[in-house]
Image (cartoon, rainbow, N blue to C red):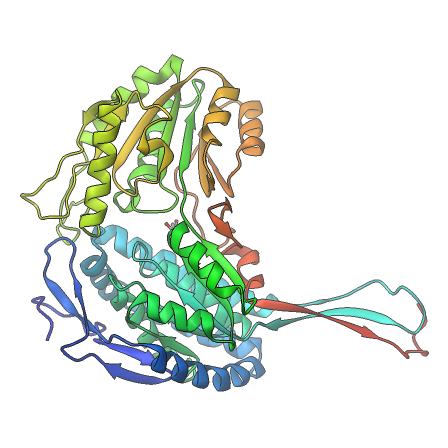
Length: 490
Ligand code: SIN
């Protein structure tokens, strides 16, 4: 059925519904390689009936899973982690085929995704409540941590592995069951991960992977009273709609939404390190991450030197099919993404920015390829400043003072990631504290790690994923007041 010449064994054209694999027919949703346009395969188009079936099985399976204890859960997650690493290359090939990022970056994402499984396998055994200080004789107060129950996870196309494991691993470690709705553009990595989880001993029915139309499945998940929590990564627009849909049922929510990340390059920085860090912050996954640099503020004293060095680096980037050796920037995910990049470049140029390089279609490579761009002389009126481009466009703005840089950086309704380059501790501390963002990278363009809390403020979302905080989002705190303990004075 698949049209690609080589089909990895883990590429399964089926959804997992409450422990039952449901194969796709010819009427399933076709998934295409964004680099070549070739169809990779199909997944079933499920709806409310399958969501109900998955919820019924998950409700039973969750109780048993929670009762098995943290040691068993940790062992299953460790086995899953080992399975994922053992199939790293195969998973990376599937990920590149459906998402487009270069193969080396895809393999890096498999490692990154696996690190969440490992971290939460370890954290499973560290969940615990506390005994509070006795207030009066004969009474004790304590807190218990309990899994929230059956949860839903809706994941994006830009990280088809890591965004899945970042939600599934803490949910499963804490004793929850999960209904996962992967992005329709990139379902095969999620399906392969579920297959490996099954092989690792994850009980049947505990995890479902529900492919199909986002609106219908999202609607069924938010309407179901059995689903106690929803974790979503994606656009602020969709996150806000899911928030509203979840309100009548008072569901707990984790939302990891859009960003508009500033990079502030102060004139005392190590220039080479700042250029490299900005390249990493801007061009990872072709600019298609929520933490990608979207506005690069450079202090006047080094503006020209920074622009020239960055332009040289951007011009040298190799654009190509992610499966081709040496490719550093893959295709955009779809035509809408291509259009947005081109519109942002045109808008900036029409308002006075200078296009130093790139920003054109590379049609000889395929419909979704755009050459990496650098714009100088950008101003706050331009769309590149106000909106997340989600593509390979680096917009440069000049600033003079610390206060001006912070004011411009915070001039956005979003607050996910931010970056600062400086060698002056006072400047670094001042910026760390003044930036209204959930994450700050100092002298680095790569900040994501399983051990650290990832998340935003303002319109970038709610809650944190990763780190110690990540498992808390899947737990309820129950307070118990024990009285009548006459034999236990304070
Ligand atoms: C994202 O773009 O949503 C995730 C990026 C990351 O985990 O670094």
